[in-house]
Length: 355
Image (cartoon, rainbow, N blue to C red):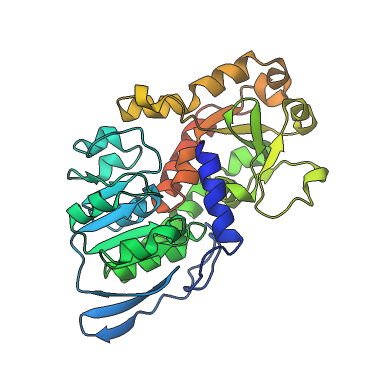
């Protein structure tokens, strides 16, 4: 299954209301001002009640043995400078425990300082492995609704909303007693986005229109719209105009829009093309993070270069087509993913002078 298909499933769950929303809902907006802070509900001096997607969980003290299910929750925990003891990825390209996280966990492994227990798939975790890890807190997403009863019988369990990055960070911050740090980091992320906006001012003045595409296979392409979360929102937040077609204006909110190759010439007014790529086939043949990252884009780049329709676009002729792993902004839609995505956009789009 492609990362886009996985994220589509999770986004549909959250957006269509398939889970219990107990924290209030604030759609992620990179340029928004800070929301009202989350206020803990205290039960004693050392305990607090955490409102989350499945209701309320009481947590006492500072959790020391935390299991995270999926890169999404791992991202937030690492952003708050806390190390987990176990991790379940949303793809099974690595077998066994994470004894060398830097080479076994894409994009986040370099921030992990200790070996992690592999608890299986993020969305169908191994209860046996989690029991052996003896956690005092389990963090997951609304993709873990069906496992919630089993997980919460092992340790206090908090599920956060995939489509609400800010509230997720606040909820996890409260769960690990670092809410004040979470609020400060949210402020710093917004400041970083604002600072990055300035670096794109000249480019946007001459090349404002961006065609955002995503694909796991070249023949199965999607228009980059609101269903792409941070991938889409950050492009708009920087000040670019996203190119679309009138027939897509009435599409269902947050629904994926397939785009045929034959449609591309109708979008030729784009100054820039950004193709978000993912490739999760043959992952068992990869042994390092570097190979994983290159694997995401190599086939798409080759197909784009060989395709006559793609090469006929003005952006292709001008050398303004850029390839970015979908994983950065759809797999990691929080502050770390924001930083990585911003850096990638700056590195690629601002690397050469533009006429």
